[in-house]
Length: 267
Image 1 (cartoon, rainbow, N blue to C red):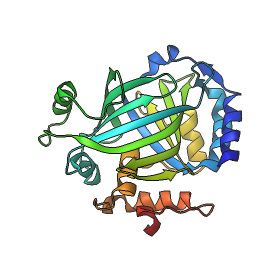
Image 2: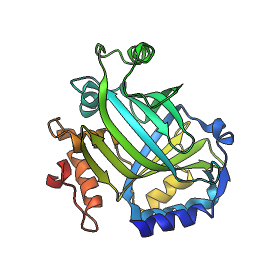
Image 3: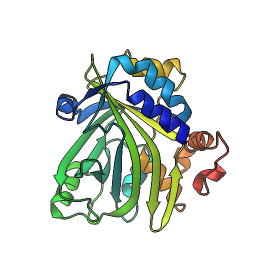
């Protein structure tokens, strides 16, 4: 995928930029989310076609950022099961480290009916390997479906991200690539898959990126890095509800002859 990454980097160098401080006005912690998945070969053209409508986040000359994430779940994977069963008011609990500026945050993403997402975020000193009482208190406040007495490290995830901010709308979108997942010594790379997430304060289907993705015949879909990682790494968890999206991911990863050695190899 080196040739595509070089092309992506070349397009990024042509973009107008926005600083982290300027981006504060579009934090969008309460927002409408839409996600799209595609092969990395399609990304450079899409980026070129929308470049004039957006600015790209730049921190000290870096525009492609590296992230590490640790996800937490109950011993019985209740948060995963809520997602699998299509329940509203489900959550993801994680700690995310921004490697390029050495910042870490404890986060809870709560998904409501439809596309609405609310995110709680708190700065922490380091990438948390386990949660303490203050984090448990917030989880219990945000999640009332079941008792949460124990949360364990459930999944490791690393990826690269590009962030674009609209010049005209209260909107930004992220591009996640070079996805890797791991747990307890097992790991899998999803290196040909790109996830675009469009984040808006309210639904606006006339945004440049949504119109471009529609023109490219790339539909929105329900995809979560946590769900994808769990189904790839932990083969004993139920995954029937995700067969369609997993099949799609497998086709993308297989497009140029590379297959997974885990869950997706069988569709």
